[in-house]
Image: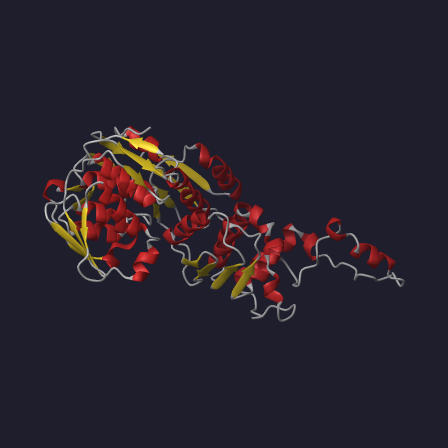
Length: 450
């Protein structure tokens, strides 16, 4: 529960950066054919380990006045093995038994490309013990006593012999579809994606279970795509890699800000507060979604971004009611419902289908119900349509139930800034789960909550 007060806020708000995106981009930049430029500095504690990996891999991190850069390693295959050594060491253990359901041979029996063969040869040189011929179990043991003792060792014995010859990496690269066990994490997936792209190998990666940190995997895949590759997350357990898209030279990596903060912060400028949001580069893969800008532009709000990535909405005093298709709002439906109350007139949102309501996880209903407590006027005259009567100031002094929905909690804060009295925001723990810096950043621009 939070008590939020109706203060005047202003200033520059800097959302926390998504370091997982930048760290992955730094590693992959060492595998590109040319220099990759980064907006911002590498002098950050969270980057220290990655910078050490780059040095060991033969890549060079450069710090410049206007940013930083990574010069790639001269031997990309060797660099890959250093950068992803931890993940490569796990490959044997994360290959799922589903890959062998029709026998021990690979289902698609693909032959190795020249690049893949180079991986095999290097593995042979670096890890000859992997390829040493082992005596067959029971050989020279006519009574089978040694074999029996070996089988009884269980987990204390040697690892189970894999169903393939050669290294786990070569096996993975031989398949069009690779199944990974529940032990695979987001870093393992990215290591496989990087190997696929280096070898020009298209592949579908299917996990038995979603990775522990799906958000980090999504951020890392954006890093892959920012560097010229193509890897798409179809769902939380499936990633598709297009081997025809190689890493390229001359890439620029822009800061990746947490848009859980950016969206409500931009709304602050839309309702008339002098708030700028930093590091919101439109060219970034994490730029605010087009539907958010398009929907607000229907209200005559103008999205503005300078060359340093500082963004805000202008014409807050002249914003007008709008008629908007709910399907165009995407995940920003609660914000439009609120913004419609801050205009002089009647707005309409139509095409409110069951599919859209389900996608918003009841946020539509919750937002309408809680804004009504503040005095907002919502009317439904026909199925799938809602009219919102503009009301620029609420009386306040109510208890708003956020139902542990992050977007509704943000709307509750925005509505309180437009209220005459403070409000009590309940069931808002989701704010700290999703964006731990939310309240600190809110206070940094003059907000007050306790």
